[in-house]
Amino acid sequence: MSEDLKVLVECDHRVIDERLFIDQRDFRTVFFPYPIATGHFQVRVNGYLIEPLNYYHGYGTIDRNGNISLNLYVDENSVSPKRQKFIFNIPQAADDIIEVSYTSPASYCQKCFGTGLVYDYQVKMDGSGYKKVTGISKLRQDCLKSILTVRESNPFHTWVGTSIESLVGNKFNDIMLFDLKREIGSVLSNLREAQIKQSSYQTVTKEETLKSVDNISVIRDTVDPTLLLIEVDVTSLSGQTVSITQAFRSTGSISGLL
Image (cartoon, rainbow, N blue to C red; front, side, top):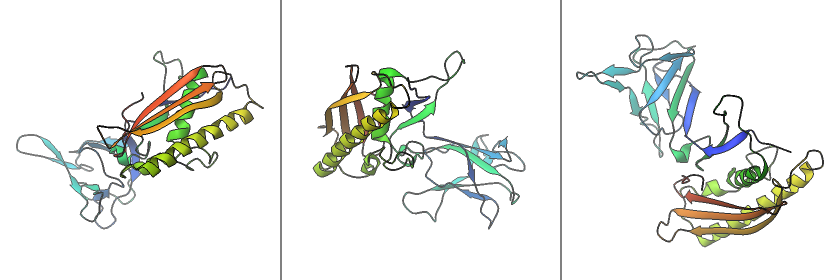
């Protein structure tokens, strides 16, 4: 029986301790590589979490009402989409290691690439280990992973993925939706072939093995033109039917795991 330690969850678009570099012209300015979603962020210098009003590494000021204001500004040299920068109160050392945690907008998230879904390790409630996905749940997750992965982003399995991320920022049209439907059918066929090869050296249960793709539906919502509904019905080798439904917006967000 094969299993997957990475569980499909909704992405929080949170970037943790990303290494950023200080501007060598003033040793105070740090540029974010992508837009950030809110004005809240955390800074570590040489591994230590820094408070905004820290004397040596501070990046904020306090107003007359006692409120802390972070030195966060729009990078005037950036083009659309506008990015941000923050400025330390005083110059920093050239060899300081600066790490920043922040939340990115869904459409610029480098974890889920705008799909709203990410595969991550999940610890059991009792702390005894990690959750594992097996059987029919693994088949469902494998199908979703194959569909939502950015095409050719996996160098070891280049067949995995579709061009669904290319829909971000574009208007849906019939040709685009037809091509996406064809891609979904092709990637699921490749998944079945991969499972057959896998079964030659590892036990693959009937519940997790894809037998057939019974339906693929890619339709635009009649009320919201930015909303795309993807419905896929598959049958496992054990005869169990799995229905997979995802709502995808052209703005790059997915409305949860349906």
